[in-house]
Image (cartoon, rainbow, N blue to C red; front, side, top):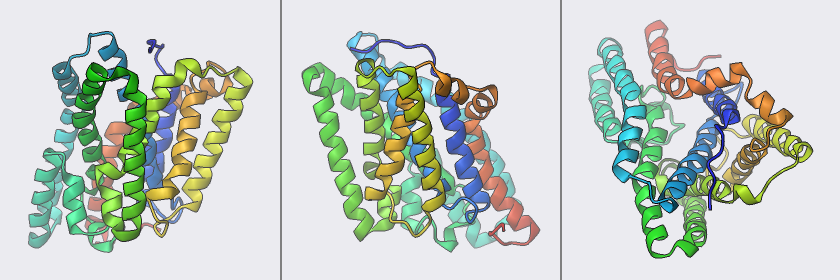
Length: 313
């Protein structure tokens, strides 16, 4: 069903774009008002890689759930743990006593990978009272971890009992996830933004692309058109979306589809693949996880130390 491909270096370029968009948004949201969409790009990438990998290995009867979880822990937890320890050190010197109490709760929720629910209970993502929360950005890591915990079990169960219905089942889950997202974005915007069920459809569409990529081979000219077109749409979204945009919901479709186009285009080794795989792009892609973890507490503590203001103009 799935063939193991050579390493997709172009995806590192897409990761670089995603993390730099988030960093710029957090430093100066007025310069890139839709930079928060970088998180959604990461969700689609994760779905593409993880669902594709799990399904390939399960069909080949060589998938180990324990090994999968151990690899995720080894890859993600050390950098997260170092970030939390360093953030605790900074919080000790810079946060007020009442702020420290909330911060301590955020540390616990982050270590348990439920910080998305913790911050949802606190306030809206864009609200002023959360803009100095040093671990606010870990909400997206919690969403990813919840995906990592649930979906391997789900995929194994589907492939074992009804393998022919794999893609149909995933498609139905994606539709329900999107419908929930669109409903909540109009009834409880903060919940729609933070909880993982409203984001699962983005992981799934990435996974469905991985499952069907072997049937969707592109010529080099079409690959270039699709890839650069996808990047152009992402760039427009980064500039046109802002904190007032109802999101995720229906407004998440455009950047999600554009990300799929970039991933699809990169499957052909042409000009687009080469540009996305440039050493500079690969460098930022390789450090994207660490850069994402570190940038936000550094910004928060810098502003607290300098003038206790958040906005960087």
